[in-house]
Every structure is written in structure tokens, then in C-alpha cells.
Length: 299
Image (cartoon, rainbow, N blue to C red; front, side, top):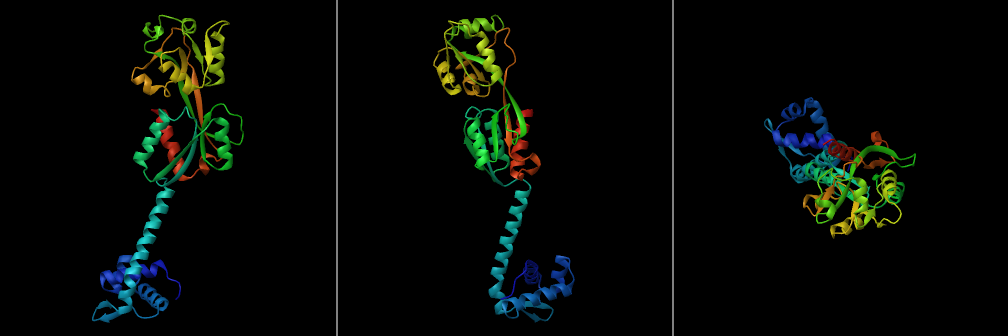
């Protein structure tokens, strides 16, 4: 059997549907001799005639009848393949492997995941969590293609695709004595003095330095990871610094309260979306995720 071409199969299918070479030629926008040539080449490939002429109408031979369902199945598969390739090219289908920090899995990030699922259901998202160094290792090993890490970072081969600034807040349980104070009626010094204890969390060098400037000798304090610190204050003990998105659920339920001392500065945790590839070189589906996440940042 010779090689079959898609144009031969299309010509065959349209002659069957329309009943003549001339109508198939008009439908496919080619000349009638071109249709005739394609059918002849197809007949050579499958080993015999596939049409009989009955008056002005073309009818299938037994060979043609036997071949038709397979020809149409092949065209359908090729069409689906072309559609899939186009949707991948347009960033509507594919797979994205992303590494993110355990403390950046809620809020803005989860909203972006929901938006991806609703608007691009055929893009498969694979999410892995780890700390900065682990995410960078995942990138270098090819385990993920994009990573969300704290900024600044000092790996010159990583490309920053997007910078996200998350506000940091002082938070306490709703029953903590500081939670009952009117906003702006007390100072940061009062917060550290009456935290009972103050829980140091490491969100950035800037925020850690700021916390330590208020932690005088003899002040009751301890240092905990963010998840542990949040659970600690949820149970009614102490005050800590959290990102607003990380604590959102407990703040919305009023389990935790945002403290607002008069002299509290604007503090942020900076998250960078990074890749070993530049934005131009990203896969279409990765560009789609970047667009969606960027849209969430702008809201």
C-alpha cells in the first residue's frame, strides 16, 4: 500500500457526501482535475477503484464502502489532533508544573488556581510545595518549570517573571487583650510589651529586622515557623506577624483580629515568580498562567 495523504481522504469524503467530483472540487476550492488526481492516487494506494459512475452520480464500489468508515475515522482523528495542537499553541491546553512556598498556597495563589480551572479546564496544573532552596532545586532538576520564591534572590540564571507584594499584619486571637483596643490608640511598643508572648516569624530580612528592633532583653518571646505561629495565636496565645492572605480565612471568621497600632509601618513579603526561561520562551500554557496570576495581582 502506498502512502495516504489527508487531501486524498478529504477528496474521497466530499465526493461521497456530494455525489460528484465537480461539487467536491467547489466545496474544497480546488479544480476538478485535482480531485480526479487525488482519487486516482488514493485508488492506487488501496489497490482498486472506489467509485462507479452511474449517470452523473458517483456511487461507491464494495472496496469504497469498506474503506469509507476508516477514511472518515482517520479524518476525525486528524481533525482532533489539529484542534488539540491549536489549543496548545493558544495556551488553552497543556500542563504546568509549579513550585510554591507552603505559606503561598492560599489567597491570591488559590484564587489564580480557581480562575485557571474555570477558564482553562484543559490545562493540567501540577503544584509542588517547598522552601526557597527546594523550589530552586526543583527548577534546576526540571521537576517544575515555574517557581514562587521569596524575593530578593541571588541566582542570576533565574528570570523574574512577576513580583508580588503581600502586606504583612500583626494578628492576635479575638479574645487577646490587645484585640479589644481601638485602632490607632496604641503603639507598636505596646504590642510587643503586652503580646504575652510575641512570636517572631521570618517572612523577609526587612520584617525580621523590624521585629528584632522591638524585642528588648527580657521580653517574653519565641520564634516559630508561620504555620505554627498562626496555630499558636489561633489557640489564644500571643501576637505574631502574618501575611494578610495567609491569615485570610481566620480573619474572615473573626477567629483572628488584625491589630492596628498607630505607628505600624507598611511591611511586605515579596514573592517572585521565576523560571529558568524568559517570558518569551515560556510554553503557551505557562504564559496563560502568568497572565492569570498577573491579573490577580492587579485586582
